[in-house]
Length: 446
Image (cartoon, rainbow, N blue to C red):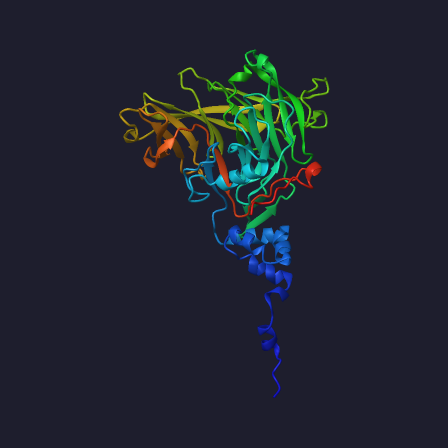
């Protein structure tokens, strides 16, 4: 008896490994999230190659956007890697797997700390003080790249972390769909404001920065000038804030804000710093760059302690105990040259809050952050309220448009600074400095 060998029988005997690459892309690109992509990469070498190609990434992101999913959810973490919004995971400490992997591989005695973020990339350091060993990490992939140590180490360091482009952009087009652009060659900058202890109490119009360039894998030094004199020890060392290609630091007293654009600094004239050197050259060929200096009017004794973004504008805010209201200075930047020349407009806005959230034995109330997912219509703000026990407090979610509040976390350890972190459709690969490309990327732990 002869067995039929028509088209239908050939189709039944077809293995998924025999499918054309274009068909395989269409099938695998419909997986619901990156978690399943990562698992399917382990099926075969071919699948891993296909799913690592930028064209597949673009197709996967297009299908995600067509599904009307939120483009990018953001959450907040503190320097310990703790999250109270549970958007990264259900765990209170979603960075614990990353921290454990770093500790095991680099033989760290303590958990590293978070010192900066950009989208889903997290800049960690082996210590909070005397910072030396930095790692650019992605907690979703458990990949990281160790950086060469900067040549000078001081107890307190002002650190900022910024990329020139997100790994991918998703924009709506005229046809109702989305255009996806994958920026595989994005660049990172890590900025350290450094000074000798003898200089910290001397007002100056110049200060020194060390900048790490991801595309070269080296630190470079620049001299930054300011339109106004200030004390370097008054710059808050706790956290920097990235917005529209700028890194901002606020003063401890809330009376000024400085801004730097590390991509505007001409690295052709800046000094290349050996990662193993212990001193730097103060030659005349150092690059000079003028920072943005914003002075805040404190005539009514309100001290801004928060820097954030609301309705697309940079905001500096504080809480007033007498009126139970939050005050915000809105910074509108009309023209920016990257050298401190801006048309700036500071608008002061006042928002009243719900008195019911304030305990009778209130000890302190701090503005933690705007919700990083504010779409411009809802002004969601997070406040930390503590009573007699100032080591722990409650976290409230407040709508500054309605004044209503909701307690979302009880008995939270006292922490002042929070970093925004993205929960992306596709995780950003960590950068690979050319000089260390052979061994810079550490594989995930077993």
